[in-house]
Image 1 (cartoon, rainbow, N blue to C red):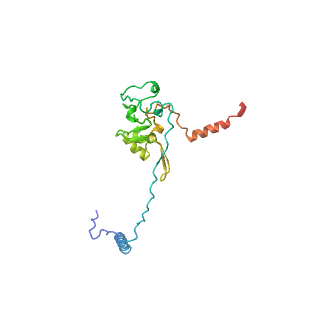
Image 2: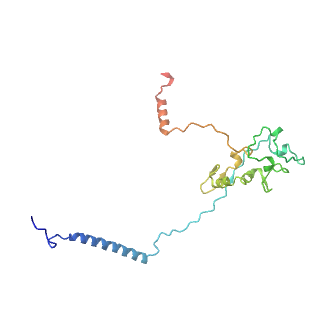
Image 3: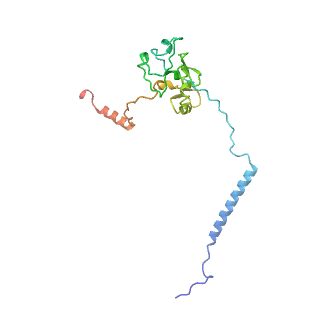
Length: 210
C-alpha cells in the first residue's frame, strides 16, 4: 500500500483560471470606468425628446334623432294651449292606447312639459328641445352617460383623433319603452376555409345536370 501524498506533492490550481478571473475583473472595472467618464463628460446625451403638443380634439357632432311619428308627436297636434291639464298619474287611453309604455314608473309629465308640449322638461324644471333629449335621459342614466361620452355605449363613428359623430339615446332606444326587444339569433359566421370549400364544391357541380 503506497503512502498518501503530502500537501507539498498535491497539484496546485491551474494558473490560467486565476488569470481568467483577473482578466474578467479588469474588463468589468474598465467598462464601469468608461461609463462613468462618458456620463460626466456628456451629460446631455440622454433620450430627451422634444415634447409635441397635440391639437385640441374637436367637439363631437350629435347626429339628429329619427323623425318623430306625426301620429303622436308633436303633442300640440291634439293638446292645444289653454286646455285643462290633468296631472293625475293614470293609464292613458284613446290616442295613446297603441303606444307601448315601459319606462319604470315614469309617465308623460315626468319628461314632457305640460305647458309647452313640444319641449322636454328635466327634473329641475329646465326645458330641453326634443333634439337634445340625451340631456333628459342622462340625468337618470349617469353611468351610461360616462360610457356614451367615452364611446363605449352606443355607436360612435368618425376619426380616432378628429371629428366624431355620436348617436343620441333615442336613435337606438324607444324613449317610451327603452329596453331592446328580443332579437332572433343569426347563424355563426363561416370560417374562410369553409367558404373556400363551398366555392370549390360549387365549381365541380356541372351546369344543366350534365
